[in-house]
Every structure is written in C-alpha cells, then in structure tokens.
Length: 264
Image 1 (cartoon, helix red, strand yellow):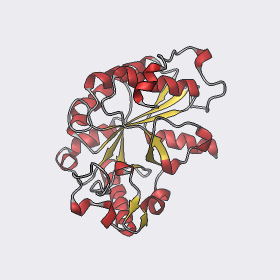
Image 2 (spheres, rainbow, N blue to C red):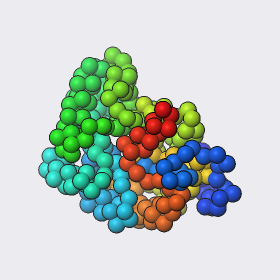
Image 3 (spheres, rainbow, N blue to C red):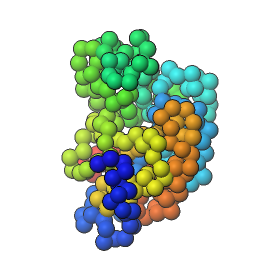
C-alpha cells in the first residue's frame, strides 16, 4: 500500500475495539512499539530532532556514519544525547552502498559496497562498535544497513556481523506485520521522506490496531537530505507523547532487548 493509501483508508481511531484482540506483550500493556530512529549523523538531528524529542520526553536512536565530519566536530553533543538516554547506533564508518543501483550517482568509488569485501565490512563495523563504546560506554549495539543494501563484493556481509548486534534494520516496508515472525537481523523499517504529520500518525495508529511495531528511519528533520519537515515530525511526537498508554516509544536497543526476552 502506498503512503497515501493509509489516509484513504481513513484515520485510525484509538478506541479499544479497533485494536488487535491479542497483541504482542509490550512492557506496560501498550498496544504498539514505536522506534524513532535517525540515520547518517546530520546537523538537523542535533539542532532540531533531539531538542524536539527532549521537549516531549521521548528517546530516539541515532545511527551514526562514524567517519562523518559532523561526528568529529560535534562529538560532545552526541555524547550529551547519549547521556540523556538516546541511543547511538552503528551505521558503518563510510556509509557503503551499492553504486550500481538506480539513483546512486552520489556513491563515491571508494565507498561502493560492490567493491568492498565481506571481511572489510566486518572489520569496519566492529571498529564502529569500538568507537561507539568510546563515545558513550555502550556494550550492546544495534545497526542500520546503509541503503538497505547487504550484498558486498563477495557475499552477504550482514551474515558476518549479525551476531554482534541486538537488532538490525535491514528491510524497507511499512511496519512489522507479525511479531511472531520478526527476524531481529532483518527488521522492517520505514523511511518516511516527505510524509505529513497526518500520514505519520496514521502509521503508528495502525500499528496500535495490529498490536505490532513500527520502526521509523528518519534522515534530515527540517533540513539536510531526505527530509521530513519539522512540523510533521513535531506532530508525530506530540501524538505519541499524548498517548503513553498506547505507544511504547523507546530506543531500538531497549526494544530489541525486550523482544528477545519475550522470545526466550
């Protein structure tokens, strides 16, 4: 279904009769889990997204391209975000993507996943975890695969690193359809570029109706690339904060810990 299809189906009401009969067991009886994640380590995330999250008392996951300039020059601000309960996650050192895919003219030759080996990706990703530990002391990590690509020059690099992470966002879609079949190493995420506040709210309300999970992957908020407007982002946060009994909003790390514990 397209993003407009959610609106055409009508606004989802937060009435109990609209929810799934036997939803997955979330920590405090909420009806859905929502992860607010932000890729690529962008200025607008520090300047707009994190202050907005803090105003609403919500925690997000920030997947850092660890070789990016904004990580080097604003390192103390990322550390401060982590001290305040936000997650810093691994998004590789150099954001390797497959250059041959349509619309990938921006991929630099030295960052082409297709000319990078599985061993090289594994070494770089493990170094990324060490850098995250140095940033905030974390010992458990989650990962978002740049561009959703997994095929390195000589094989599937996700298979080589999946045991190093509590969870990996890998598949692009709308939401997790069935918690019973969720693969922690291939979690569905949605990149809501250009979505309105109404469209974002419709997605989380549908997750509540199903009793499942929606994992957002934002990029620029009110600036930078692959933008979501600050107004749409604010509308979503206000909606989530107004209904804590319905939505469990937390870091992807905490949510994957919970999901794994429920399975165990």
